Image (cartoon, rainbow, N blue to C red):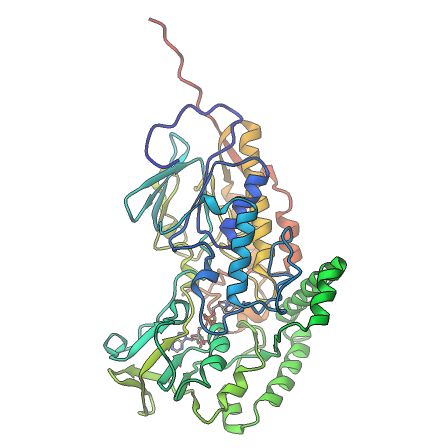
Amino acid sequence: MAGTAPRPESPSGRAPEVLIVGAGFGGIAAAIELRRHGITDITILEKAADLGGTWFYNSYPGAACDVPSHLYSFSFAQRRDWSRLCSPQAEIHAYLHEVAHRYAVDRLVQTNTTVTSCSWDAERCRWSVATASGSVHEADALILATGQLDQPSRPRIEGADGFAGHSFHSAEWDHSYPLAGKRVAVIGTGASAVQFVPEIAPVVEHLSVFQRTGNWFMPRRNRRYNRTIKTAIERVPALQALRRRFVFEYTESLTVSIRHPNTFGRIARARSIQFMRSQLKDPAVREKAWPDYTFGCKRILFSSYYLPALQRPNVELVTDAIARITPTGVVTAAGAEHELDCLIWATGFKTTDFMFPMRVSGSGGADLHEYWSGGAHAHLGMCVPGFPNMFVMYGPNTNTSGGSIIVYLEAQAAYIRQALQQLRARGAAAIEVRAEVEATSDRALQARFAGTAWTQCDSWYRDENGRIVTNWPGYMREYLEQTRELDVSEFSFVALPKPAAVVSA
Ligand code: NAP
């Protein structure tokens, strides 16, 4: 598939060639689904040295998934030997490797390949994909599976470039740097910081945790399964299915509380308050750590270890705004200087940028970045008018605050597979969502945010215009229902160009 050689005439009914960008859970799910349905000409381009996506990059101490593994795993590749309820990063990464190998899609992954641009050739109905190394790949269809949590974000803080100590982002953890005995600062207190702060706090000499906004917490101990539980799960297959079902329903109940902040949200909030009060014994830390926004507006954090860590004698929770960074530390607006050896950015990701800075141009050279300048939107998060044969995975409005993203990715893989099957069945060259269908579904989706907790604070779910562009506004089961069967009336098809008439001499 690599190279720019002219495409052989495509016989009607042949399976499309597919390029997938990103070998995380999304890209691997798509490749497995397509191969299982006879679409086998697939290349997966991955910028990292290994497959895994977020589970390759995020290897900070304590990195784990806070969604139980029964649900944070493929429905068709259930494991019954997870070490604990919420698996650590290495176990999840190994799982994805193992599944990719079992379904023979690991060999489709081309690592160390950074895609720089993708452009649609309307005449030939082909996508052309250029990489940083200068290679060009072509295919009939393009699946962008780079996700929402791909590009680490480092806020611009005055003086940050001049910091003379060591520094790194949580998603680019420097395992070669010994933190023992060091004065360390963490900027940011989201889901990542909450996992690694309890791990590094006992090791460092002093830890300053810079918090801009407090969080709502729920308990999560996540101890290793004992032998009895492990044996029961391994020996009774129905138990696994039952637990998966239970976790599915439990996570849906989190969405209930987010969708109904004044009723169910208050009940969940009361549980969180009770838990946080029991954990925050120190009144000064309690006051500082306490959130001041509606429960569920930002991601609810699950940890039974983070709040106690904040109360260690060598840890300081700093809530004064950061004024600037000097070569030796962080200075707050109150004028206090925190001298440091190491600064860790736990400031999250450029979530609303999606696959940018990659350049994506569709019909007539339309630029996706410009098309989304008012906020990203796509039909069911996957299909964009003007970008035929292109599909986005974990795209606009498909993040979940409560559920498992794997459930969404599997649904997306099956939906995209159906679209490509339609191409083949109709002998068509291109499939494209109709603009009015996408506009209507986007309006309906945005309207569903009204009255929910998501609208009641600022968060990484919103773009600079305040539009919520990352999250799905409803339940997992609604997304499954809406994506289960591709409605062909929502799409237009481009017929294959007729083969040129043979002129005999
Ligand atoms: P995040 O949730 O976006 O948190 C970023 C943190 O940095 C926030 O506390 C934010 O404060 C702070 N921050 C950003 N800019 C700042 C600035 N200029 N000055 C001071 N503080 C600043 O990032 P994350 O913790 O890496 O998590 C990102 C997402 O990854 C999560 O929401 C979740 O979806 C996923 N994740 C999942 C798991 C899991 O177990 N499933 C684990 C880790 C991450 P504000 O709150 O005030 O903006």
